[in-house]
Amino acid sequence: MLENNKPGWWRRAVAYQIYPRSFQDTTGSGTGDLPGVISRLDYLQKLGIGLIWLSPVFASPQVDNGYDVSDYRAVDPMYGSLEDLERLFAEAKKRGIGIMLDLVLNHSSDKHPWFLQAKQSRDNPYHDYYVWRDGAEGKLPNDMRAAFGGPAWEWVPELGQYYFHQFAPQQPDLNWENPKLRRELYDMILWWMDKGAAGFRLDVIDVIAKEPDRKITGNGPRLDEFLRELSAEAFQKGCVVTVGEAWGADVERAKRYSAPDGSELSMVFQFEQMMLDQTGGEKWDLAPLPFIKMKKSYAHWQQGLHGCGWNSLFLNNHDLPRIVSRWGDDGKYRVQSAKLFATMLHGMQGTPYDHQGEELGMTNIRLPIGDYRDVELLNYYREAIEAGKDEADVIASIYAKGRDNARTPMQWTAGENAGFTTGTPWIKVNPNYKEINAESQVDDEDSVFSYYRCLIALRKELDVLVEGDFTLLEPEHEKLFVYKRAYKNAEVLVVCNFGGEETKWELPAEWKNARTLIANYPGAFPEKLRPWEARMLCREA
Ligand code: TEU
Picture 1: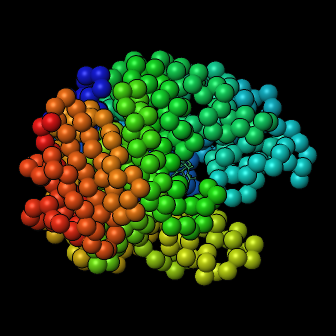
Picture 2: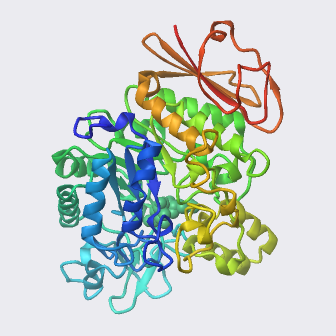
Picture 3: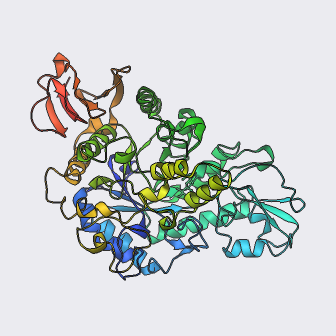
């Protein structure tokens, strides 16, 4: 069991993301809830994880599935009560698991009492909690766009002002320039620390220091200052783990955001690798994965943060398509490719994140447009069709990249609605649940689940996986991702054959007698690596 009261305790842990809406329903409402999470803690303990990133469960109008918070200190009734959440903290703790709450500090809901006050008048004490600019109706302060489509400015006729929003209009940006607002957020965080939160995931934390007049959103000039204050005034008052979502971080910035002295955050959650298969940074464009670039990008981050920062390792979350469908093979080699991605990721330095169902090899889904629920996806569809794009292309992008791919209900059993709910699920269950489900995997030692379980155990056992440095081998190889980790006299070698073809590769002589830690095919190291074959070896140097 991990002792989560010592500094840096989280460096050895593996995290698991729960999207509570889709995890486990206990009431028949069709949406998951907190008692549902509690009921599945034994499953998570068996998997071996040490942390749960719990996507937002706070009171919310649910325009963006809880990333639009109307009360930061209340649990949304659809998820249960505050007592349920406190019970979850306690039950998780008993199993050596810490709960990380998901804090959305860049914006609130437009139904938050602060915003309702803020729009009353320009001299209301809460007005300055948000970002306002004068203007005239139809004459926007500038041409900035929101991430979910449309302009980043929304007109409030009663005030004759626009407010700024980087996401949906129902998610007005909070004004971090205002010290009163910042203090209010710190007090709220301290309150949750007192209740037993083991840590926090900080939603889009790299855009809080925005300066719309200069069209700055990410990594604004005051960001480090704000993070240091947030850390000193809140996080450092306890022993919590913090992970900052930072789409725009490069290695140099990430070193500051995750400096080992804890002056800002414990770790960054950056997206460089996950954005490589999109052209021009445009999410919906479909481009093949530039394999060699991807390997070099991992090496750059592994080496850049070694000893001076800390990274999150992930291939999935609730905003990304399922990795077996994205870069792997969700047909014939689904199991092998799911295990390959797990090996590739868990061999690196950082904190691995497993997004619910990833440990089962869950896949993307294809739905008729009317069955999708995500605000980003639906806005994209509407805008793209209005702009005259070919519908088949738009649908192809949605199948490949839509966020609902990762949000379908957790597949627990082969029974009705995959054991997720006895009611009507809020979004369709992936029809492959009869084949892909937890029940059939937990006791099968060849399953994707058992493979994850083994990888998670290895990280607790081997210092080299936690501390080791990273060397990329075969950097120009078109098919193989090979790397080495080294710490003291221990070395680990990871070899991954990306794709459905066999690849001939000679294992270097010094590795011939090495111990196999884990592999997704039985037997000894082969002359030719088989489709999606992945192996992790260990030796004393
Ligand atoms: O995501 C940040 C973010 O930038 C994404 O919205 C991204 O643009 C999109 O997912 C790409 O497909 C965070 C949360 O993870 C996301 O669920 C929220 O919708 C968003 O912030 C707003 O709070």
